[in-house]
Image (tube, rainbow, N blue to C red):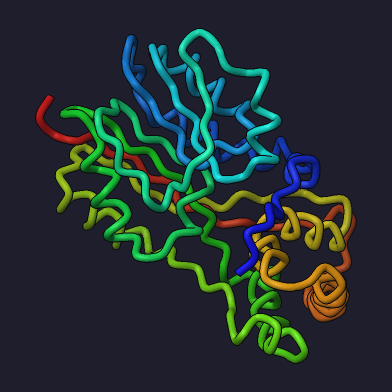
Length: 260
């Protein structure tokens, strides 16, 4: 797989208000930790991490992300205990945190059970885990991407790869958090209905997130063909409405580690 950074902050932020809504809903579940330590896994361009830092009254907040382009946007934000670093959240295991927070990032990682076991282990006694992940993998916007990836010439270029979401059912997470000692807990599946100007804007939405995975795995010219095929197959499956109501399911959960 290519290591080229395919994240485009400007494209991602085109729907900034819509993407921020789940962040604020997740943040409302987290209790302040005056003087505490907070880590934001998959912090992106950092603006929301700065809000997290202020809202939780933390002494130290670390924003961690793998994208240099996203972190460049965050370069002017550090100060007063807020800092950013490039790193792989897939291997994050540094301990001593009062809050481990992740908004729209952990769905990129496989083996959700091992992942959450590892993250809970990084919490101090009484520490909080707060996670939001997209769970819209059954919507045509996501299903069609996998269909196009399975067609030639893309299948050969991708060596048969198709993006499959590792996100499980809400009740599975509730049972796992309970087993990991996070009580109390809050787990919910929430639908966010976004009113986009027209149905073709769904392509722009997904291009800023899901399709970056395919973009990183093929030459630029072939990805342009992929986008054309994706658009041609997707748009007939969407209602031709203005504005277009785009329903997007997300999983939000929070829990507190025992021992405080």
